[in-house]
Image (cartoon, rainbow over all chains, first blue to last red; front, top):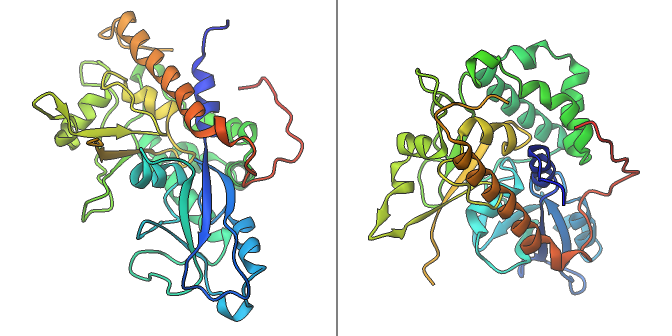
Amino acid sequence: KRMADDKDVLRDVWYGRIPTCFTLYQDEITEREAEPYYLLLPRVSYITLVTDKVKKHFQKVMKQEDMEEMWFEYEGTPLKWHYPIGLLFDLHASNVALPWSITVHFKNFPERDLLHCPSNSLIEAHFMSTIKEADTLKHKGQVINDMQKKDHKQLWMGLQNDKFDQFWAMNRKLMEYPTEEGGFRYIPFRIYQTMSDRPFIQKLFRPVTAEGQSHTLGDLLKEVFPAAITNDDDQKKYQVVIHGIEPMLETPVQWLSEHLSYPDNFLHISVIPTPTD
Amino acid sequence: QCMSLSITPAQTAAWRKQIFEQLSERSKREMENFQHYEQAIEQSVWVKKGTM
């Protein structure tokens, strides 16, 4: 058996899928009964980008005039399309039985909770601006700004069409750094909680200390969210989840940034209460 | 790959091994029983290249 390679992590992250059951909201008006629809959702993509089939499925039993903008909800929480699918699942539905059960709505768009998503070009614009923000943190924006328009398009098309090689042929440039510096300028990361007034925590954090030592995930949490690693009578209060796994606190953040970032080049970290059962 | 000297090879092995193991558990948990589900994005011809 071959030794696992760091490159395999990139593939595992890219090809992560969430089995999902889409059910039409009970108050939607249909002409006949709407069957649920089952789909494997790519963890690294966006929910409004990969649900054409869901819309077509429910279109068959609904009148055109009863269908406004489609939106999704999980147990009362409207799902933000501008968060990657894997983040939405880790944050709201970790530790639940699969498939993930999502309710589909075509009415009463929750204006206060969700941004409208009239077209895929809006998702593209959001994705590109997040990548640019990440590169500003990593390389003062020099790598993304040196790319051509077609290179930006390659990143987006790679994600949209689920083409790992196409995406990574370009994305690897965004993952480079001067060897002597031991990492990026700052690590692009965001920390999310379900019960919080703030959408997320984001701060400047360097991958190495002034003395050249690697900062770890534990160091990062200690600095920006100490509650996430405090133990209560040896009882772990929180799970720190990225892509459905809980990396050890000893894991260097530079390695995490290179291998467990989403395609938007951010580490999206969910801090969720440990299940009590 | 540059790796700070402050981290011992044994520690490196531990966190790396744990990530590989957890990712493989994740695949089992999230994908094994759902192979018959439809993919959200249809793959056109998928040519696996050894470039990465």
